[in-house]
Image (cartoon, rainbow, N blue to C red; front, top):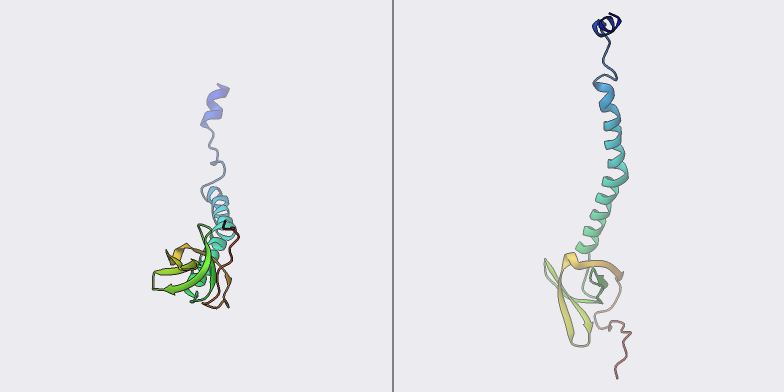
Length: 115
């Protein structure tokens, strides 16, 4: 009989509906400020860097090629990596600009020795 009386008692739901969503919302807000917002900021800075490159800038591509920009179009850049050797890349392949005051006549630095 004791068991039946315990089952018949009305008890309020544990936690409630809104109390369960508040921690989830706080976690989502934390993810936004810790992960999403800094990543978007970095992407905007990278796009701005790629948009502002000019002929003569020393750049490094995402593949690791070092060179000087010798020509460009809206979507591609030609990078001079050695005497008489230019490689065409998409603008999205530019990782960093190492020297934006380089002259177009400068040769890129080479570390390999020729024998």
